[in-house]
Image (cartoon, rainbow, N blue to C red):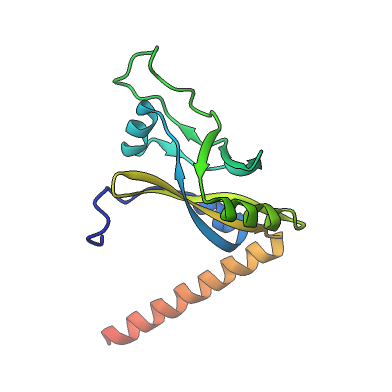
Length: 158
């Protein structure tokens, strides 16, 4: 962790998104959370699987991310787990994203949620969906790299 990062670091990682999509660009966005939501996120009780971002009225929102209710807060003060959450980006970044996703096959997916200082941030990826053969190719590459690494380690031991 660098000296700039004083928070607990990465809280949630959407590894499935990197498997299902080819990430073309990434953006860092702030996320608007309520009190009980931020406490749940600090506890690591957030799930990004299946979530996505959409632009609506020149604002960007995160949909289908699940933040579990905070146990210590009462039922009155708790939040709805899957409500749309506003993301904070500069106007020109939102305009650029809007132009990119209007292209065929591009979408915005959250890649990870982390803390930068005291603020919760979400890393967004502009992504293109992978075909099944692309996924198989990635798995084959990863297996080949793992095998090469294993051979190199065993050769170093001898």
